[in-house]
Structure formats: structure tokens, C-alpha cells
Length: 277
Ligand SMILES: C[S@@+](CC[C@H](N)C(=O)[O-])C[C@H]1O[C@@H](n2cnc3c(N)ncnc32)[C@H](O)[C@@H]1O
Image (tube, rainbow, N blue to C red):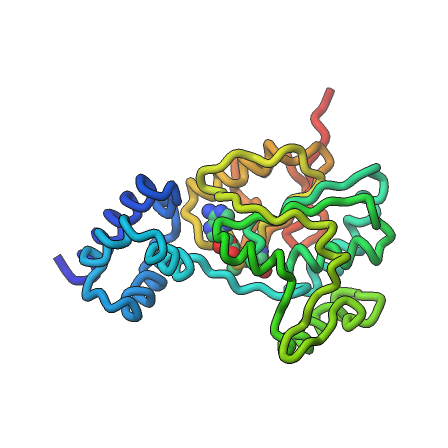
């Protein structure tokens, strides 16, 4: 057996153990991504092999948390893919305005930038007091960061550019206070967002939503897990609700595809059809 094949066996054994001990299910994550991230973690861990790390990982929660941080890719930014947020403004908001109250689920929200961007957009579109955002992630550490809403000041230039390209109507600096090298987002934005831990691989749905965003999360999943997660969204989404995926994801060839129509070409924004009576 080659070292690479042996490494794959070690990954499989460890992922089984992690599922049994901690309930985190990475067994259906794409192999290429797991391999890359686990070998990165291993090289900084002080263990010679994954098998040697395994017995401690299954007993020591703090050590496991370092691995969890290594496995999940948590990069995000405000108004990421500005054209996507512009499309929400131009093609989706008009429908949301017709609802008395709008519930939105950001699944795999990482450190919260996407959820805060949505809150800003909806406030600017006159939906104050009429929406709630549920921002969830498997990784509790990033959820805590999201709750804080504090980001490096040096990011603000890029976030401001994204905001403007996404059709922002104010000055982005209205939404944060600069303190030393950090930007503290306005607490009034946080009032619209509930942050919570949720694992798409094992947890149940979240109640009826009018819009679900899951962007740049399923790229790390194998096909069966993608189908499970899309099934979960399908159950959670109200008829006429919107499902938004990342730039490299789509509903093409998915089991639920027939129940959705694309809202805009190229933007991975789908609308759930109303069931025929
Ligand atoms: C690259 S970030 C995407 C953040 C944001 N949606 C965006 O597009 O900017 C992917 C996030 O998915 C989360 N994630 C990975 N597996 C998950 C799972 N099984 N359940 C919930 N979140 C998961 C990771 O912790 C990470 O924060």
C-alpha cells in the first residue's frame, strides 16, 4: 500500500471515530479537500501520523477543536460576489416586500459577513422590523466571531468596494465604528440576526424559511451529502421561497431541481415553485 493510500485509510478510520465520539460527520466530505486539510493540520500538530494522533483526538476535545478548525474552511467577506447581492436587490427583494415577515437562513455562515451583508441590504430596501436572519455553522468558534461582529479594519476597503458594486446606497462606513485596528459593526445590525450552531450533515431543518442561502459550503461535500442537504433545504423552504447557492454550485441534475426555477441566469438563485392544486 502506498503512503497516500495508507493516509486515506487513516482518514476514514479517524472520520468514523469522530462521528461516533463527537457526532460530527465528515465521512461524506470530498476526499481531495479532506486530504489537503488534514495533512496541513498534521504537519503543524507534532504527530508523525494521523493514526498516532487519533487516540488523543478522540479523548481530548481541545485537540479535536484544533482539527475541526483545520477541516472547515471559514473564509468569507461582506457582499462576497457583489453581483449576487445586486441580483438579490434587483430580482428578489420585490417579492420579499410582499410578505408580512421574512425568515432567512444562512447555512454555513462562517464568521457572519454574509448575514450582516443581507441585513444591511434589507434595511436599505425598507424591510426594517420585518425580517429575521438565522445564521448557522458547524463551527462554534466562527459563530462566536459572527456574534461579535468585529472584523479587521484592513478588510474594510475591500468590503466597501464589494458593497458599492453590490448596489449599496449609503456610505459603508455608516455601518461600523473603527477602533484601533478593528471595525465594530453597528449593534443595530446584530439585532436582526440569530447565530446558532447547526450541522448540515446530521441536524434537522430549521422551520419554515422564505429564503435559504448556502454558498460555498457544499463544494466540500460528496454527492450524497449534497443531496441530503438540498433535501433539508427543500423541506424548510416555503413555496415561492428562494434558494441561493455559491458561484460554483447549482441545482443542475439534483433530485429537487424540478421543483425550482432559476430566477436569474448565472447567479444560482432559485425560486421554489408553488405546488399545483
Ligand atoms: C467557505 S465558508 C462559506 C461562508 C459563507 N457562506 C460565504 O460564502 O462567504 C464555509 C462554511 O461552511 C461551514 N460548514 C462546513 N461543513 C458544515 C456542516 N456540515 N454544517 C454546517 N456548516 C458547515 C464551515 O464551518 C464554514 O464556516
